[in-house]
Length: 476
Image (cartoon, rainbow, N blue to C red; front, side, top):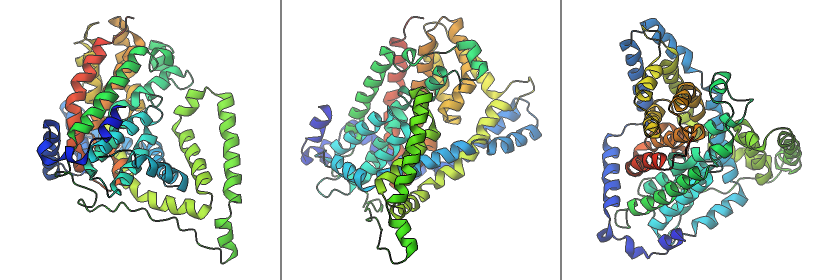
């Protein structure tokens, strides 16, 4: 209802004279970012240099630091391919004729530019509770569809930032939570973590009533901020203003003129493959916990490939969509290896005392925590480390042994400790270009275009999340 009320305001309500404080702040931050915010690749290069300098400062040999860069550089290749496939398969499904019709229908719901931004935020965050990758691609294509409307002026930057809120606000509180899924699945949980924490069921993490209340509050606040920070008509910069082409070319299927064309155009081949894929998925759900199957990124990508084949119905249409999606993965492919090097330097290169940088950081923050302050202290720590190691599951494996031991030592609720990590994990995403890359590729934007609006969200999210983590903390 709140979304409809927002969307129902008249276009005149968004005039320049009605620009609120949040809108002026977001525009000011964005103008600053447009001038000073570099390409996302600069951040990852600076990250490598800063962490390497930190290693040297702790007494690590130069050779060990250089070796750490090389050893870590390719460590995220499986994840790199997975995330690239998330973009490709998500785009393929979302660009299929049936889903495009659904997105076009959704794009007709808002009645004003500001309402469109708020609506995008709601759709993105709601989808992220099911799967973070879905929220990225669905949100991005919804923004493109909204930008094609001629009856409202949608600020393309604000809408892009709103589409990113699934990753920047709520994803880790839902079924995509890598930490919660790892803790609930004994087959996936590393022994070093399991020996300390034991198995923690989802009923004690993402399905705690405190966690669900926190997720709802964050969603509502984020939608409101998205609405009030969006520029009005006079200040809005549309996709056309930014030089972004949002037209969607019709699928090129053509007619069969030779036997090879017939194979590309027949629906028989895709249906056979989809039937085989469906058999595999049925087997997975019959023999594994449903939540474990859903949380597996390989299975998720497999499902979307099969769904894409089914929705396109023709191999030629499917491959045309893949070709259009591949350029959107460029940032992911070149930057993820550098993040792998950063993770290696943080966790695997010991200083003169034999301890890594992450170990020193952990003990610094954990030493400050008591039972009452534990959620806030660990939340701050996880958010800071999350900017340098933007991987929910990988970072949890790094943090879990000492964070969960600290939770036990101060008699904190173990499941809530996981949720502290989850809620704080999303905070740095709001300004970290790492997770923006798939979205930006689809939108045709740079990080500097949306970071002013996402930074505005961060100004509210940081105190709100830390307060909720403290206020809602259940007893052990």
